[in-house]
Amino acid sequence: MEWKPDWGLRGRMVLTMFLLFALYIVFIAILSQYMGLFGVVVVMGLFSLGQFFFSDRLALYSMGASKVEEDDYPRLHAMVGRLSQQADLPKPTVAVADTRVPNAFATGRSPSNSTVCVTEGLLQTLDEEELEGVLAHELAHIKNRDVMVMTIASFLSTIAFMIVRWGWLFGGGRNRQGGGGMIVAILVSLVVWIVSFVLIRTLSRYREYSADRGGAAITGKPTALASALLTISGRMDRVPKEDLREQSEMNAFFVIPIQSDFVGRIFSTHPPTEKRVERLREMAAEMERR
Image (tube, rainbow, N blue to C red; front, top):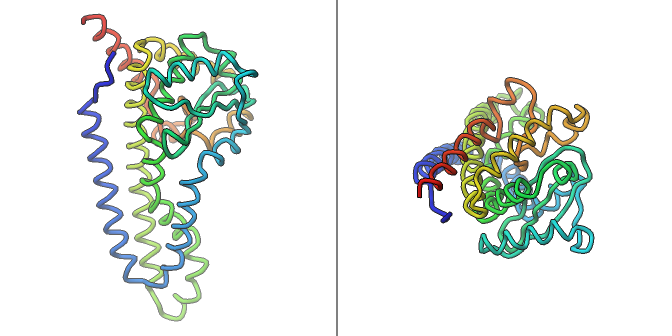
Protein backbone atom coordinates (compact mmCIF):
# COMPACT_ATOMS: atom_id res chain seq x y z
CA MET A 1 0.00 0.00 0.00
CA GLU A 2 1.44 3.40 -1.01
CA TRP A 3 1.80 6.25 1.46
CA LYS A 4 -0.85 8.45 -0.19
CA PRO A 5 -2.01 11.71 1.40
CA ASP A 6 -5.57 12.06 2.61
CA TRP A 7 -6.26 15.55 1.25
CA GLY A 8 -9.55 15.92 3.11
CA LEU A 9 -7.80 15.16 6.39
CA ARG A 10 -4.90 17.44 5.51
CA GLY A 11 -7.31 20.24 4.66
CA ARG A 12 -8.96 19.97 8.07
CA MET A 13 -5.57 19.97 9.80
CA VAL A 14 -4.48 23.07 7.85
CA LEU A 15 -7.72 24.86 8.75
CA THR A 16 -7.30 23.99 12.43
CA MET A 17 -3.70 25.19 12.46
CA PHE A 18 -4.72 28.40 10.66
CA LEU A 19 -7.35 29.09 13.33
CA LEU A 20 -4.74 28.51 16.04
CA PHE A 21 -2.31 30.83 14.25
CA ALA A 22 -4.94 33.56 13.91
CA LEU A 23 -5.92 33.18 17.57
CA TYR A 24 -2.29 33.49 18.68
CA ILE A 25 -1.68 36.56 16.50
CA VAL A 26 -4.56 38.35 18.24
CA PHE A 27 -3.26 37.13 21.60
CA ILE A 28 0.25 38.51 20.94
CA ALA A 29 -1.18 41.83 19.70
CA ILE A 30 -3.14 42.30 22.92
CA LEU A 31 -0.32 41.18 25.21
CA SER A 32 2.08 43.58 23.50
CA GLN A 33 0.11 46.44 25.05
CA TYR A 34 1.01 45.22 28.54
CA MET A 35 4.79 45.07 28.71
CA GLY A 36 4.58 44.00 32.33
CA LEU A 37 3.86 40.53 30.99
CA PHE A 38 7.08 40.42 28.98
CA GLY A 39 8.96 38.56 31.73
CA VAL A 40 6.24 35.92 31.94
CA VAL A 41 6.35 35.40 28.17
CA VAL A 42 10.15 35.07 28.21
CA VAL A 43 10.10 32.58 31.08
CA MET A 44 7.40 30.49 29.45
CA GLY A 45 9.19 30.70 26.12
CA LEU A 46 12.29 29.23 27.72
CA PHE A 47 10.13 26.59 29.41
CA SER A 48 8.55 25.61 26.08
CA LEU A 49 11.96 25.41 24.39
CA GLY A 50 13.11 23.14 27.18
CA GLN A 51 9.99 21.03 26.70
CA PHE A 52 10.67 20.88 22.95
CA PHE A 53 14.26 19.67 23.36
CA PHE A 54 13.72 17.38 26.35
CA SER A 55 10.16 16.12 25.76
CA ASP A 56 11.41 12.62 24.92
CA ARG A 57 13.22 12.27 28.25
CA LEU A 58 10.29 13.76 30.15
CA ALA A 59 7.84 11.37 28.51
CA LEU A 60 9.98 8.31 29.24
CA TYR A 61 10.55 9.47 32.81
CA SER A 62 6.81 10.01 33.34
CA MET A 63 6.12 6.45 32.25
CA GLY A 64 8.99 4.92 34.19
CA ALA A 65 10.33 3.66 30.86
CA SER A 66 13.92 2.90 29.98
CA LYS A 67 15.90 2.16 26.86
CA VAL A 68 16.30 -1.55 26.13
CA GLU A 69 19.06 -3.29 24.23
CA GLU A 70 18.68 -5.73 21.37
CA ASP A 71 19.88 -8.65 23.50
CA ASP A 72 17.07 -8.05 26.01
CA TYR A 73 14.22 -7.66 23.50
CA PRO A 74 15.42 -9.17 20.19
CA ARG A 75 11.91 -9.68 18.74
CA LEU A 76 10.87 -6.10 19.49
CA HIS A 77 14.10 -4.63 18.11
CA ALA A 78 13.88 -6.72 14.94
CA MET A 79 10.29 -5.62 14.38
CA VAL A 80 11.07 -1.93 14.89
CA GLY A 81 14.10 -2.17 12.59
CA ARG A 82 12.14 -3.89 9.81
CA LEU A 83 9.22 -1.45 10.00
CA SER A 84 11.59 1.53 10.08
CA GLN A 85 13.12 0.36 6.81
CA GLN A 86 9.65 0.00 5.29
CA ALA A 87 8.79 3.53 6.46
CA ASP A 88 12.12 4.90 5.15
CA LEU A 89 13.09 6.09 8.64
CA PRO A 90 16.22 5.69 10.76
CA LYS A 91 15.64 3.13 13.47
CA PRO A 92 14.48 4.94 16.62
CA THR A 93 15.58 4.19 20.16
CA VAL A 94 13.49 1.36 21.65
CA ALA A 95 12.16 1.66 25.20
CA VAL A 96 9.91 -0.43 27.43
CA ALA A 97 7.75 0.69 30.36
CA ASP A 98 7.10 -1.75 33.18
CA THR A 99 3.34 -1.29 33.52
CA ARG A 100 0.29 -3.50 33.01
CA VAL A 101 -1.44 -0.78 30.98
CA PRO A 102 -1.28 -2.03 27.36
CA ASN A 103 -0.12 0.94 25.30
CA ALA A 104 2.62 2.52 23.21
CA PHE A 105 3.86 5.96 22.25
CA ALA A 106 6.51 7.71 20.18
CA THR A 107 8.43 10.81 21.17
CA GLY A 108 11.28 12.93 19.88
CA ARG A 109 11.47 16.19 17.96
CA SER A 110 12.72 14.65 14.68
CA PRO A 111 13.07 11.27 12.94
CA SER A 112 16.78 11.21 13.80
CA ASN A 113 16.08 11.87 17.47
CA SER A 114 13.10 9.70 18.30
CA THR A 115 12.04 6.89 20.61
CA VAL A 116 9.33 4.26 20.36
CA CYS A 117 8.15 2.97 23.71
CA VAL A 118 5.86 0.02 24.42
CA THR A 119 4.59 -1.27 27.75
CA GLU A 120 5.03 -4.77 29.11
CA GLY A 121 1.24 -4.98 29.13
CA LEU A 122 1.16 -4.38 25.37
CA LEU A 123 3.81 -7.03 24.64
CA GLN A 124 1.79 -9.55 26.65
CA THR A 125 -1.54 -8.61 25.03
CA LEU A 126 -1.02 -8.39 21.25
CA ASP A 127 -0.09 -11.01 18.69
CA GLU A 128 2.69 -10.33 16.18
CA GLU A 129 0.59 -8.69 13.45
CA GLU A 130 -1.24 -6.49 15.96
CA LEU A 131 2.04 -5.39 17.54
CA GLU A 132 3.42 -4.55 14.09
CA GLY A 133 0.33 -2.43 13.43
CA VAL A 134 0.80 -0.45 16.64
CA LEU A 135 4.54 0.05 16.07
CA ALA A 136 3.86 1.20 12.50
CA HIS A 137 1.31 3.70 13.83
CA GLU A 138 3.96 5.14 16.16
CA LEU A 139 6.52 5.27 13.34
CA ALA A 140 3.97 7.21 11.28
CA HIS A 141 3.82 9.76 14.11
CA ILE A 142 7.60 10.08 13.85
CA LYS A 143 7.51 10.40 10.06
CA ASN A 144 4.81 13.09 10.34
CA ARG A 145 6.84 14.93 13.04
CA ASP A 146 3.77 15.01 15.26
CA VAL A 147 5.62 15.66 18.53
CA MET A 148 7.20 18.79 17.04
CA VAL A 149 3.91 19.96 15.52
CA MET A 150 1.93 19.52 18.73
CA THR A 151 4.66 21.16 20.85
CA ILE A 152 4.69 24.23 18.60
CA ALA A 153 0.89 24.31 18.45
CA SER A 154 0.60 24.32 22.24
CA PHE A 155 3.36 26.92 22.87
CA LEU A 156 1.21 30.04 23.35
CA SER A 157 -1.59 27.98 24.87
CA THR A 158 0.84 27.08 27.66
CA ILE A 159 1.72 30.74 28.15
CA ALA A 160 -1.97 31.68 28.28
CA PHE A 161 -2.63 28.98 30.86
CA MET A 162 0.21 30.16 33.10
CA ILE A 163 -0.96 33.80 32.90
CA VAL A 164 -4.44 32.72 33.96
CA ARG A 165 -3.07 30.53 36.73
CA TRP A 166 -0.59 32.99 38.21
CA GLY A 167 -1.90 36.35 36.99
CA TRP A 168 -4.31 36.91 39.88
CA LEU A 169 -1.54 36.26 42.41
CA PHE A 170 1.09 38.53 40.86
CA GLY A 171 -1.31 41.16 39.53
CA GLY A 172 -3.58 41.54 42.55
CA GLY A 173 -1.67 44.34 44.25
CA ARG A 174 -1.28 46.31 41.05
CA ASN A 175 -5.00 46.09 40.32
CA ARG A 176 -5.95 47.32 43.78
CA GLN A 177 -3.89 50.43 43.03
CA GLY A 178 -6.03 51.16 39.99
CA GLY A 179 -4.26 49.37 37.18
CA GLY A 180 -6.55 47.21 35.04
CA GLY A 181 -4.02 45.91 32.54
CA MET A 182 -3.46 42.59 34.28
CA ILE A 183 -7.19 41.91 34.53
CA VAL A 184 -7.56 42.42 30.79
CA ALA A 185 -4.55 40.20 30.10
CA ILE A 186 -5.92 37.45 32.36
CA LEU A 187 -9.37 37.52 30.74
CA VAL A 188 -7.88 37.48 27.23
CA SER A 189 -5.54 34.66 28.23
CA LEU A 190 -8.48 32.68 29.60
CA VAL A 191 -10.36 32.97 26.30
CA VAL A 192 -7.22 32.06 24.31
CA TRP A 193 -6.54 29.05 26.51
CA ILE A 194 -10.12 27.71 26.24
CA VAL A 195 -10.32 28.12 22.45
CA SER A 196 -6.81 26.76 21.86
CA PHE A 197 -7.55 23.83 24.21
CA VAL A 198 -10.38 22.75 21.90
CA LEU A 199 -8.46 23.43 18.67
CA ILE A 200 -5.33 21.58 19.82
CA ARG A 201 -7.37 18.50 20.74
CA THR A 202 -9.11 18.68 17.38
CA LEU A 203 -5.72 18.84 15.67
CA SER A 204 -4.48 15.92 17.78
CA ARG A 205 -7.45 13.77 16.72
CA TYR A 206 -6.81 14.55 13.05
CA ARG A 207 -3.17 13.56 13.45
CA GLU A 208 -4.19 10.25 15.01
CA TYR A 209 -6.26 9.48 11.91
CA SER A 210 -3.23 10.39 9.80
CA ALA A 211 -0.96 8.11 11.85
CA ASP A 212 -3.48 5.26 11.50
CA ARG A 213 -3.41 5.72 7.74
CA GLY A 214 0.39 5.94 7.69
CA GLY A 215 0.77 2.89 9.91
CA ALA A 216 -1.52 0.88 7.64
CA ALA A 217 0.55 2.00 4.64
CA ILE A 218 3.77 0.81 6.29
CA THR A 219 2.49 -2.71 7.05
CA GLY A 220 -0.08 -3.00 4.26
CA LYS A 221 -2.42 -4.52 6.89
CA PRO A 222 -5.05 -2.02 8.08
CA THR A 223 -7.07 -4.76 9.77
CA ALA A 224 -4.11 -5.69 12.00
CA LEU A 225 -4.04 -2.18 13.47
CA ALA A 226 -7.84 -2.20 13.76
CA SER A 227 -7.66 -5.48 15.66
CA ALA A 228 -4.94 -4.08 17.93
CA LEU A 229 -7.00 -0.98 18.75
CA LEU A 230 -9.99 -3.12 19.69
CA THR A 231 -7.83 -5.46 21.76
CA ILE A 232 -6.16 -2.62 23.66
CA SER A 233 -9.46 -0.80 24.19
CA GLY A 234 -11.08 -3.96 25.57
CA ARG A 235 -8.10 -4.76 27.79
CA MET A 236 -8.21 -1.27 29.38
CA ASP A 237 -11.40 -2.26 31.21
CA ARG A 238 -9.53 -5.00 33.07
CA VAL A 239 -6.57 -2.87 34.19
CA PRO A 240 -6.81 -1.72 37.84
CA LYS A 241 -8.03 1.88 38.15
CA GLU A 242 -4.99 2.96 40.15
CA ASP A 243 -2.74 1.94 37.26
CA LEU A 244 -4.89 3.93 34.84
CA ARG A 245 -4.81 7.03 37.05
CA GLU A 246 -1.02 6.87 37.29
CA GLN A 247 -0.62 6.98 33.51
CA SER A 248 -3.54 9.26 32.50
CA GLU A 249 -1.34 12.36 32.06
CA MET A 250 0.30 10.61 29.07
CA ASN A 251 -2.93 10.45 27.04
CA ALA A 252 -1.66 12.65 24.24
CA PHE A 253 1.22 10.23 23.58
CA PHE A 254 -0.65 6.91 23.74
CA VAL A 255 -2.01 4.92 20.81
CA ILE A 256 -5.25 4.54 22.86
CA PRO A 257 -6.07 7.21 25.47
CA ILE A 258 -6.98 6.47 29.06
CA GLN A 259 -10.35 8.00 29.86
CA SER A 260 -13.37 7.04 31.88
CA ASP A 261 -15.96 9.81 31.88
CA PHE A 262 -18.16 11.72 29.46
CA VAL A 263 -16.15 14.95 29.64
CA GLY A 264 -12.93 13.02 29.05
CA ARG A 265 -14.34 11.56 25.84
CA ILE A 266 -15.50 14.96 24.56
CA PHE A 267 -12.08 16.57 25.04
CA SER A 268 -10.04 13.49 24.19
CA THR A 269 -6.77 13.82 22.29
CA HIS A 270 -7.82 10.77 20.23
CA PRO A 271 -10.82 9.98 18.02
CA PRO A 272 -13.25 7.28 19.20
CA THR A 273 -11.80 3.81 18.69
CA GLU A 274 -14.92 2.78 16.75
CA LYS A 275 -14.38 5.52 14.15
CA ARG A 276 -10.70 4.68 13.79
CA VAL A 277 -11.52 1.00 13.26
CA GLU A 278 -14.21 1.89 10.73
CA ARG A 279 -11.75 3.96 8.68
CA LEU A 280 -9.12 1.22 8.80
CA ARG A 281 -11.64 -1.35 7.59
CA GLU A 282 -12.60 0.97 4.75
CA MET A 283 -8.92 1.15 3.81
CA ALA A 284 -8.70 -2.65 3.86
CA ALA A 285 -11.76 -2.92 1.60
CA GLU A 286 -10.22 -0.38 -0.77
CA MET A 287 -7.01 -2.43 -0.96
CA GLU A 288 -8.96 -5.59 -1.74
CA ARG A 289 -10.74 -3.90 -4.66
CA ARG A 290 -7.45 -3.06 -6.37
